[in-house]
Length: 334
Image 1 (cartoon, rainbow, N blue to C red):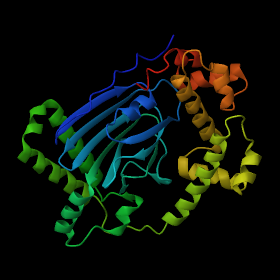
Image 2 (image 1 turned 60 degrees about the vertical axis):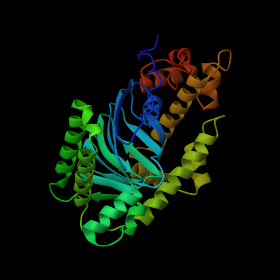
Image 3 (image 1 turned 90 degrees about the vertical axis):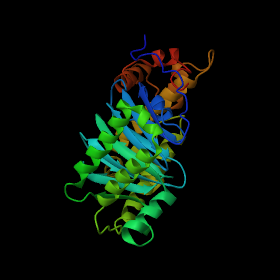
Image 4 (image 1 turned 30 degrees about the vertical axis):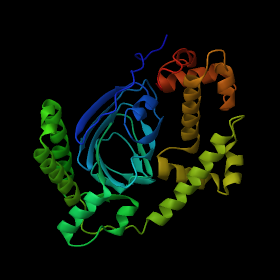
């Protein structure tokens, strides 16, 4: 029997210029799908049944986000074109990375919205905003009398100004809580515009005066090596590649590959790739048609040949046996 609650029914897409939207999730794919208008993919990296929540508040030209999950995840994808994203953790219980850059609780994640990649540990919380590029450009010009700085086009981790990290988190969460307690505020256009500008200015003022991006070249090199290794392993679903073969194919020593995975994702190649393959099995089990391939066939396609060992690993990772996932096929992705 499945260890998680029944899959959530599809949630209605919010409408209008200002709205609030909240959802609970019991699966990483459910969690990704509970974020309207964005194209996101999550992999569950730590063990146990997944529990998460998403809260969104849309204001004119600006979307506020509050996300929580009990399991470590890697989230990738796009949060709309023509926007900039700003994010910060509210709770952090381990190593976390933004586009291959390590960060701490008071780090800001900033950049264009088209290429998101965040690895968060178990029991994390995150607040963020996604702002229309034109709106940000207008406000930036008013505040600094110059166009948007070029480094905003990149994916950058910066340390918030002293004491500003707590101020950003506090204002962001209080604003979302006030709207949750009184949704009628969303109908007050003047109040929402004022709130939008106050939040946006607070986030911008938390950015340090000087930002260096000289280090991004080495980050990009490490990230490219990691992505090449992942693509090689995950594209060969008919069998597991040995670490020595993987090193030969990507042209790196085992020590360098280990260093790059630790620096980009915070875990060893073997641990990450095993988790990614288990997530691949889970998605295929949920999509399997009645009368189609069974657990053993699907597991073998992802390189898991020892069924007893695979079933135990799968249960530790997701809190249920693969047969239980197969029994709920089609529901978690509805």
